[in-house]
Length: 80
Image (cartoon, rainbow, N blue to C red; front, side, top):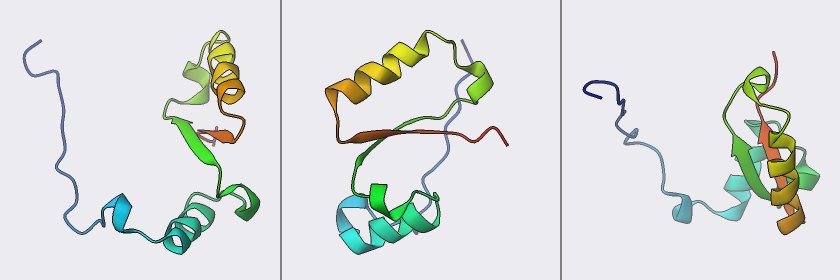
């Protein structure tokens, strides 16, 4: 469909992920994303949809991800 797609240029001042030291990533996750420090080392999976848009059947998808990766956590948007 013509004109439906959207793209935004990446900000030039963001460091590449591989150049960020562990301590910096940890501080970003704990401080900015409000992830408890005890969970910051786990693999993160996210779904950027509002909670009200998630269908009940999606619970099985999330459960499957966590079953396949016991060292992972799923990040969902706050309902606020």
